[in-house]
Image 1 (cartoon, rainbow, N blue to C red):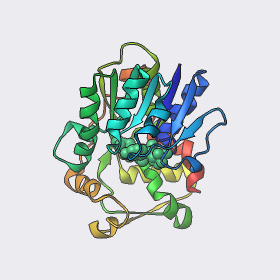
Image 2 (tube, rainbow, N blue to C red):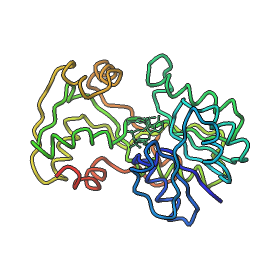
Image 3 (cartoon, helix red, strand yellow):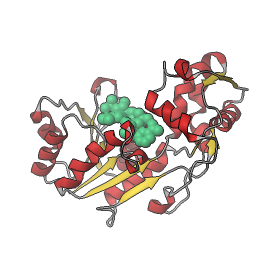
Image 4 (cartoon, helix red, strand yellow):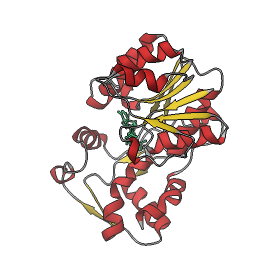
Length: 267
Ligand SMILES: NC(=O)c1ccc[n+]([C@@H]2O[C@H](COP(=O)([O-])OP(=O)(O)OC[C@H]3O[C@@H](n4cnc5c(N)ncnc54)[C@H](OP(=O)(O)O)[C@@H]3O)[C@@H](O)[C@H]2O)c1
């Protein structure tokens, strides 16, 4: 069986690739920048071009199952090629924002979920909340100055480890019983950004200062719809669950586990 994984440079995509290979499956990859992927030699990587239907046909030829990032451009070519190849299952990385239509993030994901559902191809949709890996946005300032600049430090999140997402994706791709399912997924705990920074400091082994900045300053490096969500969020706990446990069994990984796994990137 051959698996195609899109978003090969992404943390989630790369973890899915590693898990599928470790289970002995043949894997191919798609990336917007194939030359910048660092994939094992047995993983062929291609680019797809929304203006070139043939690029999708080539990428999907002989593919049985697909892990897909939510990209609208070229989706019609992807679907035509998937049908022609006889793809038997697609797992889509969507977003929990798709549960609340009417916001730009949710609508962007629904624009991909809709045609996939209408295609009739066997489909599982993962709808994660905030990724733990969003903390990588703080990498440069932590590495250089041991500081995080944030406009809403007391807003809480339920950060999910990319390994939990990859575990859910691989289960849905390789086990029976997941077709038609939509899995909302969060991490296993609610934490303020302030608490996440403290946990990162512990993992890095040095204090990290928190500096509060204004909305406009933050908008220079954070997507405005995300800032708007934080501005409206208040400081109460973020709803926790369902976690990966609902799909695979073992409990979700904590932010402390994520911080330990990635501490070297922040030093
Ligand atoms: N970050 C979050 O909190 C969050 C929460 C819920 C859902 N999501 C979903 O996860 C996606 C990736 O999030 P991330 O960047 O934080 O994690 P990531 O797994 O590190 O993904 C980054 C890489 O994924 C690929 N990619 C990302 N978005 C794509 C898209 N719309 N179409 C095609 N490829 C895409 C690109 O890889 P290549 O350059 O190799 O193609 C990009 O370099 C988001 O676009 C969103 O759909 C994210």
